[in-house]
Image (cartoon, rainbow, N blue to C red; front, side):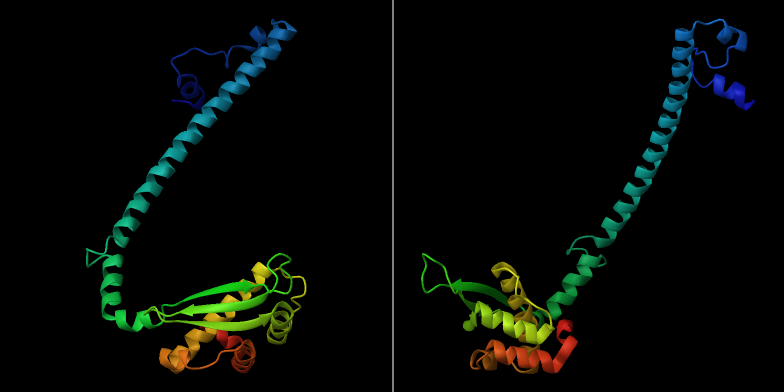
Length: 211
C-alpha cells in the first residue's frame, strides 16, 4: 500500500486532507483558513497519538526494568537478594558497626536569654551505648576564628545555624577517627576542645573528610 493510501485509510472517519486542488480553490477565504486548520491539526493529532503510543511503550519497558531491579534488591528475608546479603553481612559485623554509631547535637546557651547576645556553643556526643559527653566549644567569634584557621576561608557572614552544621561535620570526622585510633572509654575521659580538634584537623589535612 502506498504511503498516501495508507495515510488516507488510517482512520475510518473521512477527512478532507487529500481532496483535489480545485476543491480548495473554490472555497471562500474563511473556508480556506478553517480547512488549513483542519488539515494541520489533524496531522498534529495523529503525530501526538503516535508519540503517546511510543511513550506508553517506553513506560512499559521502564516499569519492567524497575520490577527487575526491585526483585534484585529484594527483602532481608531472601538470602540471594541484595538486602538479604546486606542483612547477613550486617549481622556478622554488628558489634564492629555499632561502635561507630553515635549522635552529635550542637546547642547554644545565652547569658541573657532576653537579648540573646553572645551565644556560647556546646556539643553533646552520645555513643551507641547511651553514654554521652557535653563539650564546651566557645563563643561565636572564637568558632569563626578557628574555622578560618582550618579552612582558610572567612566565616564572618555565616549565620548561627550554618556554624552549627560546620561544627557538627568537624566533630563527626574527628570522633570517628579518634574512636578508630583509641576507643570510647578514652574519648569520654579526654578533653576535646575546639582548639584541639583544629590542631588535629590541620595535621591530618584533607584526609579528615575520608572519615
